[in-house]
Image (cartoon, rainbow over all chains, first blue to last red; front, side, top):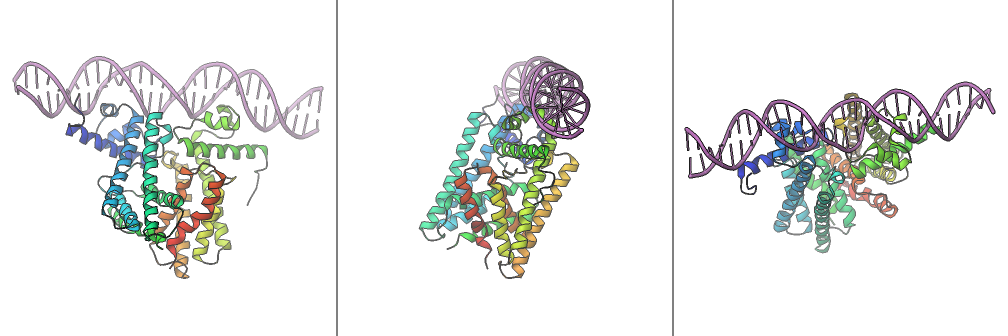
Length: 195
Length: 195
DNA sequence: GCATTATTTTAATCCAGATTAAAATTATTC
DNA sequence: GAATAATTTTAATCTGGATTAAAATAATGC
């Protein structure tokens, strides 16, 4: 057995597997996706996936953790580079959409959190809630620095994150559409925030 | 508001079943929902559901058809009553959210369309696409009558419908939150449309 | 009340797809 | 180029919830 963190081949293949799984889950739904479907994309047999993951539940869990990491990275970068609240929101949306629709995508929609085992479910919920809370605090910051009009940050956050999370539902990998999404979505979603 | 045969005992119970199923699917995910879960809410045994529905696939299908009908009714009413494009958009959002968060709700998130059997899947996709197309044409009408600023109606439609469709993901039946959603969401989602 | 129909339960079976163990292959090390 | 470790496959088993048939109960009409 390899020391997982250092073994590049193992980690590369595992990453490919998570992306293939995310694609399947988004396109075929959870129940409509068998391990065979995921394995086929990789040119493997379903049983081979068990070398990388304990079971299907863990596969889903890791897809969700990965989705969370990608979201956090986009937000980190936006906060680092943005000038004010509104600018950070727009950057976050752009960076995140860029990943979602690009090479590192797709990102799994978290539709099956409740069927994860308790520890995994709680972990994913924590990640998810922390992300929402961070986004709301960016909105709050924007209100305070005058770049965003006063609003209910909870509801506004729900609205924007909802539109964002729904993207994988209709986006199917078309590069032209991807460009259009990255270009226009941030503007569309943040237009209503201006004072 | 066709009440049709829905006042028979059979239809009433079937309606209750669909609402219970929608609630389970939204809260526990599709794979996390057994027929027993749905039956328990109704004080029945899982096998009893087969009196109302051929199988689980049909249960999901009917949840989605019902979601489509509710959406269409809200849109019909908004078009009937609205003054201009923007006003119709706002009314649609309010009417639809009112149903989603009210007594007739919840409405199932369509997460498992791909695992429906072909005829059902195609039917739901048709309904879903028609609904999106109608919404886009309302946006277009708003642009033409000057109530909405020129925009990419496809993308703007995707954004607004995404935020709307995501609501059942975080809304859990709290009446105070429901009031807040119905009150604020339409404004939040349409603020960016004004010229 | 009695016959008929509607609804629900009990008690099984069924089955697709997850999971596993062992064997086979492929890569790596020295 | 053996020896060892990493990866994948083959060929089963296992399993939980879906499904079904028949029997039991409740409702309705006459």
